[in-house]
Length: 305
Length: 305
Image (cartoon, rainbow over all chains, first blue to last red; front, side):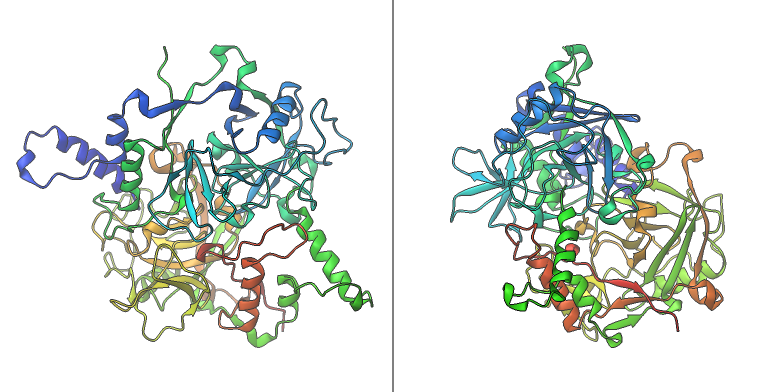
């Protein structure tokens, strides 16, 4: 069965570490799992509860990390909306195959369902920002969509030098602020999450506000909408949102403490290399390449205490 | 709401065609929908029933086109397996988020469930083939994973000139033959379908046998498996396959006659250009790029008669 052998290979190389016969064969490169197991606590960054959203669905919790360094005005609005319970009881109303799910007020901003409270109705666009001042961890390979691609605090990002701009990229799990035709018509009350092959053509066309750190499968496996653009025709198909809260507003024991591997660490570079050139026993021909949206930035639950 | 405006823009430009005021504004480039509406019957290729599989699930039919020009031995085996009803009653046993679903005998070839009948237990690998003799429709942009990327009969493909090889690429909807560690351990009885961001690192590591033309959402929205590699831990979660049949073995009135846009047509090149540089009213900054797995090769049901 495909890649079941990855697990076998991992197991084999883990066993090989302890078999006492290092001279038996050339040492296999360390697996991602081994590299992560050998990481030190300082290789990880604790996600701030002020930047963490819990989207609570009937079947579980989706955890989103916000990116205030790229979209400060949108993140500020989203924090207000979450604090005031804007999304509680609203639905996921769109599930567009190989593209996005979207949630918020199905009648749109100014629709019949709900006021946005103290949040702002309109915001400046935050499609990109100056790259100066950002720690940008460049990937080793070229990117087709942008002059440079890499990671900023674990978020997939791109940049160019002509205008000196950087922006967050649309990869699997990217969260953005839906908008209408006017570029500045989004305000963070309608959010979409990428569930398919990276729609990088959306980069710099819409404000990206964060990414999903945990629970993607609760969104990606939703039944697809049968209407145009994957919108559910029948409101009975809507997926109810129990609540969407900022983690900082919950008592500490109700939070999940997540950590993201630092993308300027040697561990991250080594893990990425295991994915650029896979050496598991299953693999026949390593790719020698990785694209931005194939990079996986490891996330873990912090050990208690 | 995101991209709902695409529909609006389409509608607007369709209306603009008939409003009698061509001097009112510079003509908008034609949309993909307009280009397809203006295509001629000779721009389309009818899919052969000998190359068409119907995977029948409880909630609908998934239609797969086989690629005998790339994997003749595997396709031959798959046709035998389909004719002999190999998959009927077997399940989808794996649903791995952002990766693949896989179906066949959950106990593996030689497992307890089922004999493979007159099909061959082992086959030569068909990871690539000589590019000579293939009509390869090159895309305009560079590809990170391969020296050249393009389409062969509507299948996403890549090639290189050093060894003169071409191969099918792992994009959303690509169907491949699962295998174990030995490269030649696949025989087409276990099939996987890509449901996430393109895992192009699998290219030339496994035999690709076709692609899904219709019904992807029946596979991509399956609940994710909770075991390692997305395998359902509990067999009660298995998704039953009613049957998987070769279309040519069904009476004609039970078939769906599908047509694929020819990728050497001017219409296809123009449609792809509308996706490389989106000009709908929603778009702010066209990408000027498209990657192989963002290309969409149009598929339609042939008009009756």
